[in-house]
Image 1 (spheres, rainbow, N blue to C red):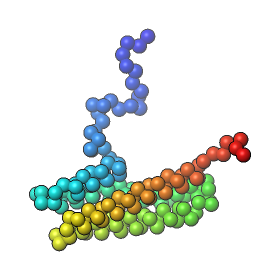
Image 2: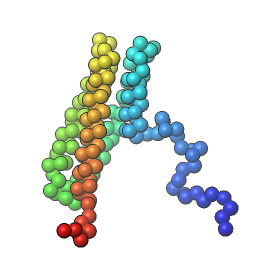
Image 3: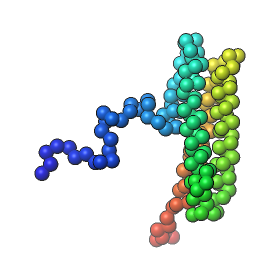
Image 4: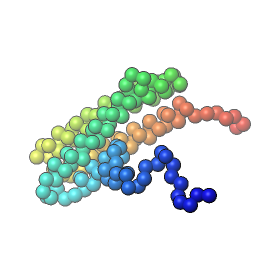
Amino acid sequence: MATGPIQQPSVVPPTVRPPAARRPGPSGDLYALARALAVAPNQPRWRERVIVHLTPVRRGFAEHVRVTEGPGGLYAEVLAQAPRLHRGVRLLTREHTAIIAALADLRDAVEAPGVCAEELRRRTDELLRALARHRQRGADLLWQAYQTDLGGET
């Protein structure tokens, strides 16, 4: 009979886990970027903080592109499983190009002192919407590629 809590080997104890704000991943990075932009722009080093939070988003998205488009990447696997989804893969690949350009444009705008905070917020909102749409389209594509028809439906 166990006298204490049973811990699965794959579970990292809470004391070892980094705080949510420091966990890697594009979602956390996106929220940190949005929070940095929400701060009043007259705060000291506001633009520098925005750039600091934009950098991991750019890196994370570049990694996403590498994993999906790279040799033996996710899109190659999807097309091997479901060649009918070629159009969807092509759309997602084009979105990669557009999002990378939007990330670079946002970085340039943040670094340009003449661009106002409202313009930066507008551009960031557009970028966040584009990323959300991209994420949903990617999830839809994977569902279409790997759905299983169990039958029994009329």
